[in-house]
Length: 181
Image (cartoon, rainbow, N blue to C red):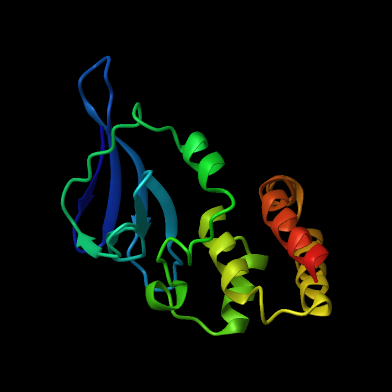
């Protein structure tokens, strides 16, 4: 079982260790406003949105967005994240009822910076590509890919290697968008 704990400075994701029966922190999220959201599929009908200060659940069937500071129970045995991603890959977040501008309003330049710097998680960056996709021209996409390469080249050692690894899926999203232009 995974759930959130919150106080005034952070949101923590906890998981119960089934062997020891003890709760263990999985990750701690700062509540600073500058952090973009992470988007996760809770199950086949619900998107879990974690922003810097709060967790929200979006029910894609009803469109209800529910703020939640209480425990979020997730039975990962029901539907695995990989299976959900596979089944929903062709469906945009917008089609599911998620309007990124409502959840995390930013201007185009800020969204592009979030892509280049790999802010948020892959789903967040996918939502940005979906949000900006129609207004981006081929030269804009090429420029973003160039900015990503420049940013990667500005890094050293492990940071550069990590960026190269973790940016691949985002680059693939942009390349697929470029092919459609």
